[in-house]
Image 1 (cartoon, one colour):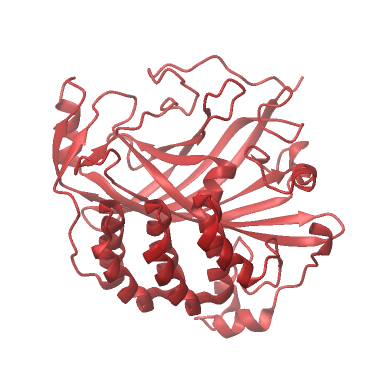
Image 2 (cartoon, rainbow, N blue to C red):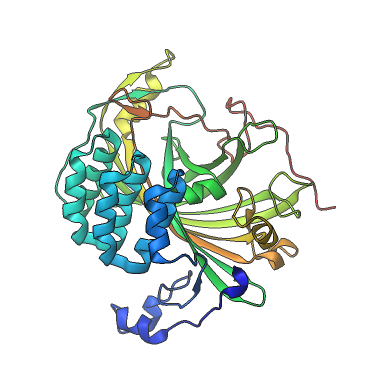
Amino acid sequence: MLNTICSGAINLEAIMAERHSADLAERVRFEVNAAASFASFDQRSDDELLRVASNHDSAMERERALWEYAYRHGSDALASIDKYLHTEPEPSVRWNLLWLSVKLGGDAALPLIKRALHDENCEVRDWARLFLEELTSEPYGMEYSSAVYESTGTFDQTLPLQIAGHANVLVPNVGWVRARLSPLWFAHIMGRVMACTNVETFMTDLIIEKELKGYNPDGSNHYEIFLFRGASHLITDTIAQHIYESNTMRPFYQSGKVKEGIPYSSPVCLTRIAFTDRVQIAIGERSGASDLRGQRLAEFGVVRSVRGHFSGWAYTDLSRYLATGEVQPGTVQLVSTADPIVGKRANTVLYGTFRGKLGDLDGDGQFDVNSIPCHGTVDGLIDLDCDGIADADPFVPRG
């Protein structure tokens, strides 16, 4: 399929038409502007995308098809999104469709989101409340009034993230191709992402965990840990802006797929900017350990929501895609262009947005705080036992 795709150039007239400043420099971004006429990775017709969104057995494929269709049509796709919100059986797809409607429609999505306040699923309703508050600046409250806290573990709070974005891939003899990454498709390829924080270092440090479920040959999960550091600024007493960067040494697999062959150390550089919103909420305890940690977090404020922007470089093994017809988990590896060896293989720009929300993960009608353990240390090292002690270094020196 890649051989049938051709690339295009950036449309400066389109960029100028959408600018909000007389200075074109204000419109330049590190990632490629949406006006760039890159070829689309997904060559399916609109009709085929809607058929997949309606009938496919996989929730990921249904979501991916509808996100692709919606990005092609912008706010004109709101009616289709609204329709699928009433028919889609998977709650996570429905709450991600609410996010998609906000991305593409803004205020025009308000009627659609208000209808989601009557969704049968509590989490979908809670996402709707959050989006309505952000769009209207009016209080819509939360779906739950209390929280259960897991006081053991390395971190005070762990928060799963939904990530959506784009991958611009430079294909030899073809040019740039853009893939639109819906949240479930991103998680399938790159892994589920989770943010992990401690009260003492909340304004300076962040640990990000990536998890590929069942990826290892023995069926266990594969984990990667990234340490982000930087600076934060209080916007209000409870809202903070965080500007972080991650520069870590990671195992890079020259085979093109994670855990295949012998890795060696290579740097990875990622940038991240985010806003967090903390809330005071009644916290009960689950673990039976000392509740002092929970009391401290309750006084500081539990992160109710986070939203932000990320970007970085990667290497995509295109030969595996051509051989299988799908982007398999582990075949997109994060890299740094500064690396003298791996940097020359960098062929993908990853960028996009992320959302995270405190949620009820077990259906008991309460927020679950810190219930998912992080498999990393505060210094960004792998800790599969979740005991705060780093495992043996898995990297192989360059030699």
